[in-house]
Length: 342
Image (tube, rainbow, N blue to C red):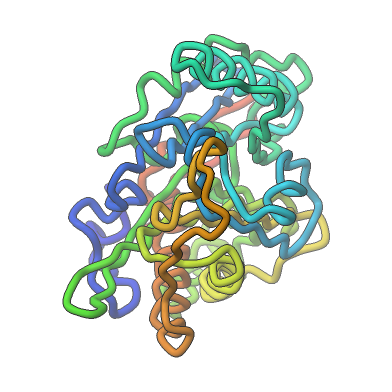
């Protein structure tokens, strides 16, 4: 079940065929989920930005940190060079290191197989802290789980309490992985903007759906309103020809989607946004040209992109909650699915 199955329509722009980030051609998503009764609820999710090797032909990319209570790796080089050269992995806080190491192994293996020299690589690993439902210090995610997520990446992927979202909490209810997409018509053709989120943020009483303060009604039933602390990772993908500067402008509007849901971006929360385009990919290092061609969106059309990013983010968060199942963790902790209250 996704949020539209409960009668809610978010925003005004049309969605892609699947209403997922994978409506952007070439983008796929894979999960590996670890669920051990009363002990572990965690995992890893990988966004594959293209079917070919991103290290050979890098993608325009940007990041924006709205609140920096987080441990994401790989943003420094993205901010300096404006390119993405690996898959993007999302996981739990204390497993960032092993996931980063495994992405290096994956890229090294792939480049060796293709005869591509690799002396340095910039894996991107994002995280949310799932300690409320997961015995996080045991760090159960291993190399195999990352490779499983990569190898099972597909277009029609699962949402909810899977992968990196297995143990997360959103607005006091069960969070998880969610996605959405929007289609923009420009110069006679359609372009896609898609979002994938890992949700672990927000207070229950602040929670809204399309302006309806449903959190207040749910709070009246549960009488539980934990503080706004956690994180929200948002990955935006598009096939629009955006520069890294334009991508950075666009992904700032992820904050609009979060605010429309009632998030105040609390002190203990890490909101990290990453955006990439599958257009305007850089030429391989062996290309001898000094001047490279580059298409660019007219800056006067950026409002359409801003709206698409905000709508995608808002709906993706709701999908992460509506698709999630109830999950019980260590010490009797439990998070209930939003679907129970709709």
